[in-house]
Amino acid sequence: MGKSVFGMAAALALPCLLAGPSVAAAKLAPKSAHHHATAAAMAGAAAQPWWTHAVIYEIYPRSFQDSNGDGVGDLNGVTQRLDYLKGLGVDAIWLTPFYPSPNYDFGYDVADYTNVAPEYGTMADWDRLVAEARKRGIRVLVDFVLNHSSSEHPWFQQSRMSRANPKRDWYVWHDPAPDGGPPTNWQSIFGGSAWTLDKATGQYYYHIFLPQQPDLNWRNPGLRKAMQDVMRFWLRHGASGFRLDATPYLLEDPAWPNDPDPKSGAPVGLKPYNSGLPGNHPIMRDLRAIVNSYPGDRILLGESNIATISDLAKVYGVRHDEVNLPMDFLYSGVKTLDAQAFKARIDEAELKLHGEPPVLFFSNHDSSRQWTRFGDGVHNDQIARLTAAMTLTLRGTSLIYYGEELGMGDLSKAVINGLPLSPKRKVADDRDPERTPMQWSGEPKAGFTTGEPWLPVNPVTATYNAQSEVQDPTSLYHWYADLIQLRRTNAALREGAYVALDSGNPKVLAFARKDKAGQGVLVVLNMSDTPQIANISGWQGQTPVFNKVVLARPAIQMPSLGNPTLEPFGVQILSFDPR
Ligand code: NOJ
Ligand code: CA
Image (cartoon, rainbow, N blue to C red; front, side):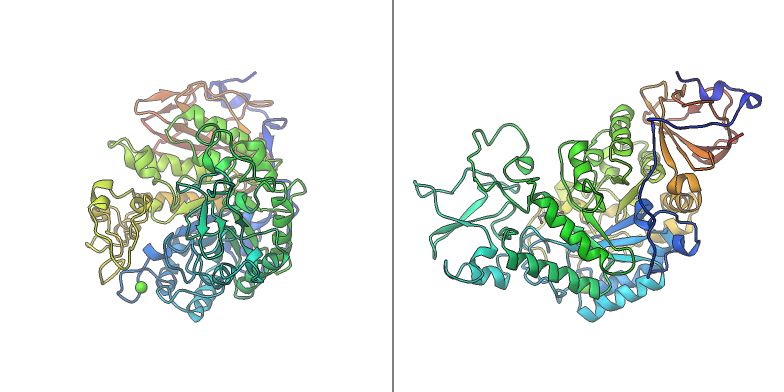
């Protein structure tokens, strides 16, 4: 039985004892032994492990910073920009692949798991990057592409030599169907059959992605050990953990059933025969145990596509010993700015993951940037503030895709489609629009390179760029930096429970965070282009009084004592005290 939050006079405010089913607290045992000196740890305040409330910044190295004028970003470029990342306040960076690769899928086709591609630098550059990042309290995560290698990896080259080759079973080979066609009618996520015939040996190999990305056979103990050794290699080289690529696809249904109707039902990437097999769990437990055996609270961040929240809960492991941080693709799958759709996803992420931290994000190198997705062409800056405020005030870990903090959007398809291919871009990829160079400055090449960038710079860099935004305290960059700082310093936002609320208005999202002492923060977001009035209810116990504006845009002087009134796409973050 909710009451209007603002309908209560200050004098009536009593201690608020928020508890019960709408409150979720992370129930994870604290860990020790930080070998990295993160700012949060140095503040001595973190009772929960760092990764349960972190901000992890995704860097697509090819597009972040070029240090040698060849138009391709590189590891030394990332090192040059660490001070910028420190200023933003991130806890960790996740680098998408920088391994040697023929680049059919820009590094997600790995030809050597324990090396750096010459275009990105050397192992010495990697070691220096980690050392410099650590000095600034920033951890570095490696993208581990474990489902498949490149068809140019020596393991596959050996595997395809003969059916008797010792590496034959490291990949997934099958005889043709009786008619000589593929063994099953399964489709690849990238289109076409998931099987390619290798004429030399007369068998098909399986690939859930491109034919140049043959699936590794995780049922083979030798392959399993080799891949675990790859992890140990990067852990010895200072990685704070891994972003695990494509975790649902490690095993396939051993009965190899034909799909009765491959074009209907679940999307190609979520079929019962190609994803989420029970045997994935022990594989992940082994990987987590390896990561845990190194000091410093290292982690697994999973690209763990799922259909439902209960499937997502299972990826953490029923005993909380599998993937630390599986990304929540249900939240990132909300494609319109709809308060009710977001509330449904947020409530389930916060309340149905058994206290584990949700991993919330909007975009990455595989999906359209949120600036483009949610922008209405009129209020884009304000909408970007609203989406940032939502994710960064929720319980759990947030992922930021490079440049979203500046207001980077997708490059138009018209520009991309007219581009000729080149040695630096030998395939055109649907995802190129969201992979353009980081906008460091307003110059035509955006401060990204002195040469010819491998993908064009988005011309909006003239307005949206780091150089001008860092200098402007009212910029989107500073909004992000302020939110990150707030989330680190405010106990309720850092580790507090999530409190589901009813905003009383379908255009408005409202929720609260509450720390152990009962102090808290209320977040109210207007997801519409007209002014809205909220009528918030849903408190368990006495409704608190909000007496302080923590952050608001457009600015407000004092929280209204009536129902809060919000400007178009307005954001209000207010605080309350126990009384
Ligand atoms: C997911 C990665 O994020 C994507 O970029 C890649 O194409 C596929 N996995 C295959 O590795
Ligand atoms: Ca370069």
